[in-house]
Figure 1 (cartoon, rainbow, N blue to C red):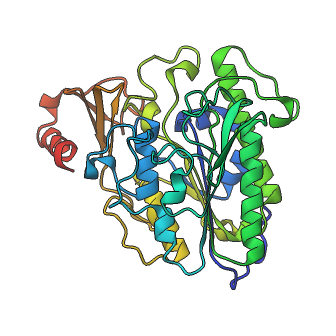
Figure 2: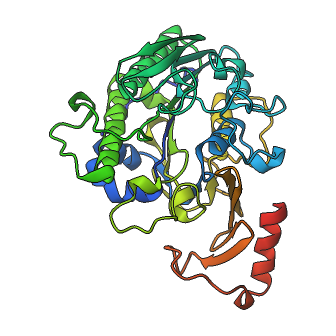
Length: 399
């Protein structure tokens, strides 16, 4: 099991662990879950959100995750990861919201990708500590990161080149920071933002893989192995984080599968960077303290909802953004919007309601009945939809 349920300490301060993995669609989890025993065990103890949506690319999703807002609210549908980008000062990050709870310690480990100063990143937006940090992806970090064993590591404003395997370093860093907070007896918010399994694709070292793991062929095989290393991290967290059973645990991904990492035979151009389901429908697990209330959730969810869920659990007094709903409340969204500028010039936008979906990419329209056609194989002519088409267009334009 991910954790052995225990008698919860009702006097313990609230604690939240959020784990964000990179470039993993819900479809990847569905296809590979038997080979991911720690993720499977966590899912068995969690509310599994089957209809959760990110944005098409990393930077816009991470803006939404941090602020609880869809990027369109402040015109942010471009990448915010560069020093010239960054989070608007008017937006309140989940760490800043957590800071309204007396004594809360706020930790970010791993990838930031939300702009600002390269050495300090999240430290200027409410986080007390940033460990084993990467400013961007490991292959395009501005300070010289090359890959998972040659990367520029950031720790609380100081940086140095590191040869330690990045996934392991990030796991150990969150364990150390979390346990120090538990021993101090303070409320905790810890975000572990793993670079894995984002490229550079590679075969992880044996210590980072499940025992006896056999790496499959091609780029998909390496991707699956890197996702296996994420599963090993989840096992390490379950075994080593103090009093984790009494914490709220959230696990998700920033967007769907990259074209390079798709299963054999899967059509190109319908994954990361697009608003098809494999590009924006992502895993979202919410484990309540003690594992209560596990089961599948079919409400419409957005990664913006993590903000309100964290704030509510920590007793924050900060007002919730309009796009952010508490995941532990029964009602989800009436609709969700996902959009981004991809490649600097191509707008990818979608609105999803309970059954219907409108893709409005670069002015091109495609309507899908996801109840009857979850694989988005056959677009429905707008002329046959009548008022439904008009309502979806209105939401995509002004929602």
